[in-house]
Image (cartoon, rainbow, N blue to C red; front, side, top):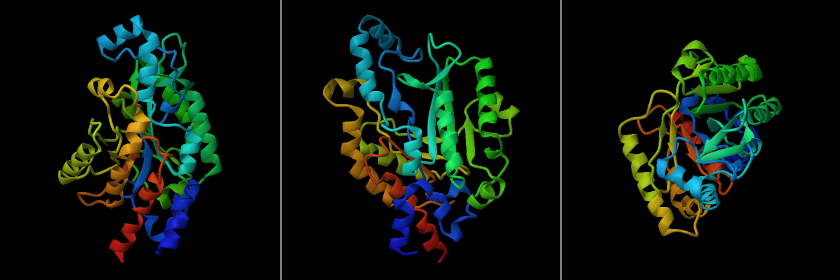
Length: 317
């Protein structure tokens, strides 16, 4: 496979899975390189919403006393994407990190959250995704549903019922070994990881939590060192995520009062993407699978991750 053909697959990313070479169609999806977005719904955070109840007591107290200061600050440091799910999928994203929450005074509707709550509801976001999938019948999306801030048992039941009804026959069962060819033959396009064991046990369409390797550092060198250390311990057998996302703490924010997550990420991208380009997918101990990044539209992140799959051809050749 030459560079021109690689460019063709990676450059037009809205249908990149359907254009992978024949030799990759029977590879389990957890042995392919798949681009993902970290905190996929953080592009629509509601700056007027309160801080999450799971945040520290000090932060929640500060939010009650000085909301005009805390919420814009949280917004700057919690916004990690800048485009709707449809546009992320057009870029080539095939893993979505959805952190679901019940919003105070939000009624029965469910939202997303990252520090504060989103403006868009879960129903609106997933319906938009379903329409995109209808228009791209050979693309497969992995959805990770997690956190579930303040959800009740009834909320979980209704949410899972909605997911089942919306995606229906598009759902891939957790007992399957999904490949592109097997998913296409069954009309399956959606893998739902649901981080709630009770619901997972009741519904064979729901997959267990997908491990997420996450360094929890604002320093890209420490992120890379952490990911390298994890690789030496061996990769999980199924799906897993290597997170390129940086994380600030209160001390870092105090030292950088005029910065935000976008600026911090932009400065680190060159180093993080260089590391990414050196990786290879596959079942071996150091093989990457899903790679997640913040602000996925700022760089050639998707193209680089998709291009890693062609290393599998070289290995087989």
